[in-house]
Length: 350
Length: 210
Image 1: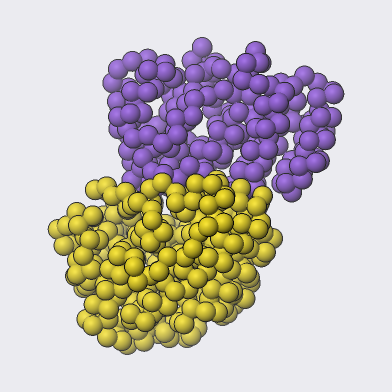
Image 2 (image 1 turned 120 degrees about the horizontal axis):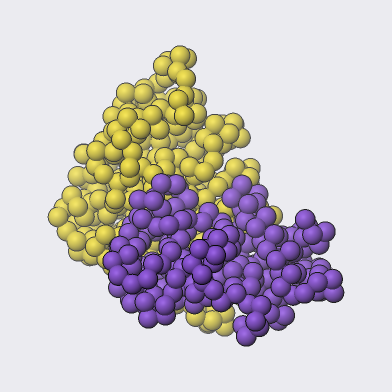
């Protein structure tokens, strides 16, 4: 099986040849190509080359078209702040006061230089791998984008205290997010990772999610012209799993804070799980610890397919050493082959 | 436990402002403002923090509760009130990254508990160390969201240790929740899992540093 076949089989809740591994690397491509982070993201060709080298090095089952979250807010006029050792960050919010929402309009994807570079990267990756390897594009949900657009605290104030402006912002953001997701699919992305951490019960109560983030997700995902995985970016998901399924998403990115076995039982073949290796703790794993974590995740969630091994945040920190990533890859090779007979005699050691 | 704590907590969790106000006012008829804060507000916020850690409550509930309590307490214990706790001299800051929510929550919870502290907003290492020395701060609370920012805490701690009176450093934020060894690795003195942990830390250090 190639990576695409492996992934599609798993997402169909059938067992492929081995557990798909989605090692979601980003700035690591800068290291591979000898660029600074800023230089790396300045040219689509760098990201094409970086992702290609990472694919060869780690034998992951996907290519990641994601640059950094703030590339979306650049389209809205925000500045991005670059440093040498961290992901690029969004600068000052573009929405300074609630009243700014009355005049805001969705920017045109065609006029956003950063987004156009992402599309060029996706096209270039598609030329290199064809249909053999899934290419994952990322779109931040209309419901989570305001964290960067206006700051998290002011956004929560908006949700709770200014419902009319909240709805207006969602309508505007919906147009942008759908257009952005569909542009990536048209460029060659296989699926969209719909980043929606604000929807997580870690961030807002489930009852509020059902009135806000879920409604937005239903509307967005109905218009996105390809499959999606909803990612909670380290946030919990179990309490809203049924609600996530109702949005039509095919998979959910799940947190190291929750038990994979409980998530698998609750998923009951209705949604696939993506996760949940702890990307922060990973930095200090020995190869033996990495292997144990991989075995544990596979034991808890891989039976019957419906599981893609990945980190729990949707992006592996640059600080994670290469030998830990290679240990994860080797562990998947050793323990991730179906039918996973080793599980019959295996006992987890905490 | 004060009989008003549970109804106060329940009303906070439901963002029922009317009931929150009513219960707090009831508390003020029974005891002094500072006692109402210490026996009703603080335990309610601490228990809500435990609820968040356990996954029962959401961050937005903690944020809105902290904001509401800060407003309530400010009315009866303004900054100039002698019952306000100005010691130890404390400051809170977001180091390096730009995610302010965690700091905002901790700041609200501490002020709602009667503490006064500097809010440094967002700073990088050099500016932060200089400002701590200039303000004669003895307790520094550092909030981060990103792992690279968490790793910079070590530089802050080493530079503060290199000269000047001792400064206690407590850290909090997502990287520390996902790696419970990280706070030791970056040489902080403590970490908080919940906003309300800062209350116990400041109270503990108040005695040690006085």
